[in-house]
Image (tube, rainbow, N blue to C red):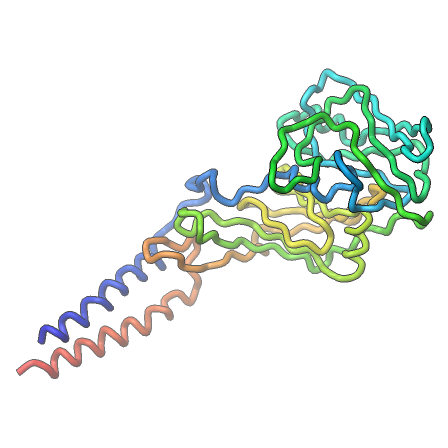
Length: 307
């Protein structure tokens, strides 16, 4: 008798926990802790054609307009920048700083800023972006993944061109791009918050575009994040749709692709019996069927065991 009663308590406890977990309501992302699922936009500068130290890993075409992710830290300061030819000094090229006005109108937000030279670059050359004055500041321009550098003025950044005069490739085709909300299970957040994974189409075109400085801009809740073509990037959770735009190394923009919130799937995974799912799956009750059968079987054994 005692043995039968002991066996019956465990399924009952598990059943109640699973029912609570499956059916309990869950509030939206207002509960999310700020320590979970964060990504800093300036991390994109680790892939930028412009670097503060050493030789840039990305060799750009001669018609390139290289980019960095930066913010306008001093809107009152003018931008006076040139590209200095390090292989043929003192030759310089004046550059137009694109998206500067938008950045300085919103100095608390990171923007993708491009430096468009006044004419084509020369092949197989090293350049340095030098600014006598600049309102722009950015982090991680040293390329050091182990240290998140404090924001530093965007100046004295190195650039390398390809050995040919072949122009930039067209922006990649983003048909087939996907987005999904996944759950973190190692943050102490009880499976919350969600984080957003955006996957862009892979293939040889994506590899070649990324290898010369092409990017994919992802607009999420008014902010723009940078991914490389063919990359899967992790971003903070959102309750809105997103818009993706492929951009070539010369700044040519492709047709935007919108992924509405209805098309962003949500991973439904248990990390703890005490954690509720935000959106119970339609077939959730089928998961309770084994528990019902187990409970029925336990009751039957108890009746048979009675004298």
